[in-house]
Image (cartoon, rainbow, N blue to C red; front, top):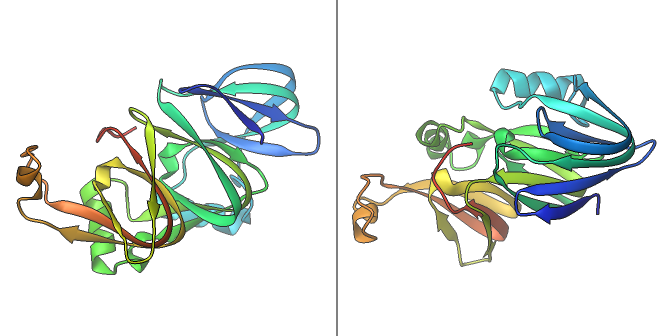
Length: 216
């Protein structure tokens, strides 16, 4: 595993010759060895076409290419960090949640409206996260950021999980999402903020939620 959790807010990555990783710009805290950091043009596998698509979608966080031989400490803004291991599947994650990830992973963009139709589009407007979500596919590790820590919730057939859209961080597996309304839901749980939207995830997989409604 290229990432080792140093604390709840910091990870260490081993960089080896001939391999690369990508990190959010400004995420490097310290490093040892011969390591270089350069602005990423393509931002992971997927080529120029994938990069242009993410730019047009507004779902492309500024990235750095990390190469060389050494170790690097990553952290950003004091946010909590969670390491996700992918074994050939796809991680769906908001671009600004990405701290660092393996360069072997194929990066792309998914239109959220394609899952849940119009309600999928509404989700982007309600949460302020946009209509598109970054995808990372393949075998490798991803370090994601969140406010107040991350909780992993399993999603099983016939047992969908409902989350606050603003607490959503990422998900992976064979999962579909849709935005549903629940008038009075906030009042029933005593929060009374007036919000009446839930993000419903169904299928087989896992969803990551943060212990806060704050944006990064």
